[in-house]
Image (cartoon, rainbow, N blue to C red; front, side, top):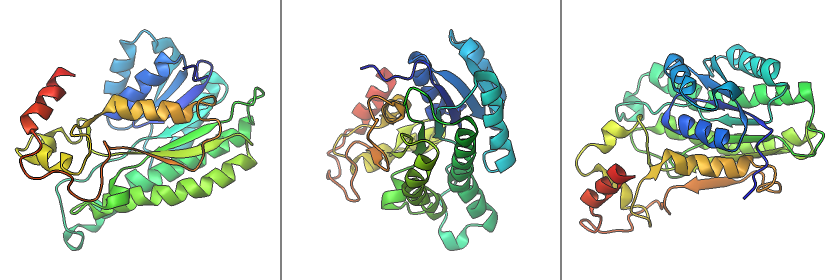
Length: 282
């Protein structure tokens, strides 16, 4: 399927993480030019990009998305290098550790979770809309696209991570509001959200390595398997496409194997060893 991304410029936050790298590779494979925003792992991101055949089409920028001026500067650098930014993927975030009941969680932890997962996405969206206002819409009618990376925690909640779940739930209201605002800047611009469930990334590998965890989390899924970062990236590419998703806005795509807020499988019906073996094979 032709996605129409070959001449587009995509800015991706959290590009140094597992999903961020999969997004980078996915957009690069479609021929897009990239503005890759990293935080504390920017040097690692630069090394990764330097080894890619598409490195000449990529710009790495260090920015803390919780600081509006820094993410605004990232968009400015993208426009200076490539002329405009057509797609923004608000992917940066963090999953606080360890599990903590809300009344025992420190104020610093709660604020950090909201800054990274909600306000960071809001500031990214704000900077993208300002960038779009500065450049105007594309002459070819291919509308801009803003995609938030949410979480099933925002839909079902997550015990021990109320701060994270609150932040991700907030993205839904942000998306529904901005889909009606962004068209004032570009009549064909769209805003959507991808909500992954348990996805194998460095952020949760330690958690998934604990005995019984995979069985417990997959018992809520019709598909007894864990998502890979590439599964999330493919959904984002679809929503970013001005051709494949030209009439889709204000929607949430859940990438979680048919997850429900209840157990679908009895204890022992999920073969944890088989799931781990497939993870190793993929």
